[in-house]
Length: 304
Image 1 (cartoon, helix red, strand yellow):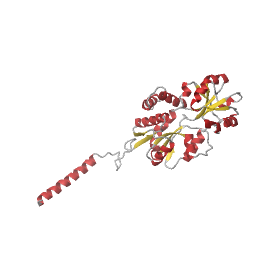
Image 2 (cartoon, one colour):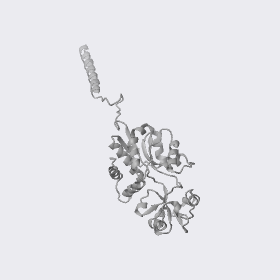
Image 3 (cartoon, one colour):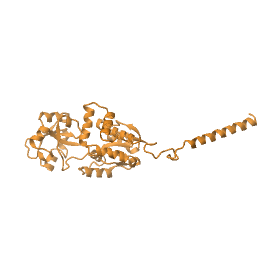
Image 4 (spheres, one colour):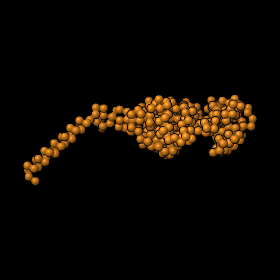
């Protein structure tokens, strides 16, 4: 190659580098940092929202995701991960940023010997029990926990509102999973906490059917089970905290907690126990998708 051609090539190369540098300066945004990240909500960081392999949990996760998207965040969904032993490592590693959880069950996962039972005590204990790097935002009034239920007719006939109102009624039979007989909130707990004496029948998956048929009078049913609504059951109040409270609560990476708190706390405040049951009915009875359920709920609650 000649000396003249070599000089020309070098000159053209320098010109190209300079042009690229100028183009980079021209496209820079005063809102972005040196690494191109933005301080605007959802600008460059993506919030990964996870869920259990459980339709009710996925609905809540989808509500979180759509609420964040409506506020301008970029969101990635990582749903149906599995149960707690599968998704907690994802949260702890930072692969997932946000997850709908249940205070009581999660507290027992980290602290099996906990003595907390009431909603506020469980929530406070959970904040202390969580591993480094994770925190919780506001808990919701909505719960998905063990509860004692009777038929609406039986409640009206015996003027029942709380579990304690069962005291003195003879011939009561409690139905539930076989292990309920030995649980601290089973027959022994009913007697020691509320003075209620019951027999026990292991009914498992047929619990609600046995209750409606009149073969048992009290049924242990998860509080967000759609059958409570569709079978016209009455959930008895538990003022003495026989059951470990399990309110819906967002578990979140501390790295993004402050950034998304306002959006997610507003969702938690609007989600009620009755509302969660209704959402589950839309899934199991109306066969609506989690996406459609979430969209409608956010609109109804003015959070879209």
